[in-house]
Image (cartoon, helix red, strand yellow):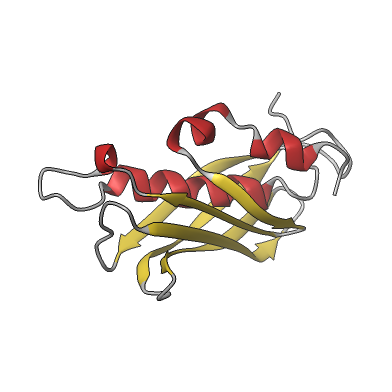
Length: 139
């Protein structure tokens, strides 16, 4: 993993605003987490889909940029399985399923901690913008 990449991903301004924390980062894999705050619920009082999606998307972005090649999302689909509630600690993981020269596919899961209940699952595809060793920053 390129030097400084962990710090750049961990310091993402949007993630920082939501309280998303980078917990693990390896080539083709990322795990991030956040606590669902009372301001992250919908009118039913359960976790807003946008908050859950943001966490999954952040894991997708981290995993897809973990090789040091700038990667940007082409498509992300997320299926909501179970609700999250205020105060729940959510953990998102992204695993590389396929990686080509220009595109890569990732499996995404968001689970509640500590019981491991699946909250959402999906896939994301990215476009890889550079070559191995390029800084992970879109052009």
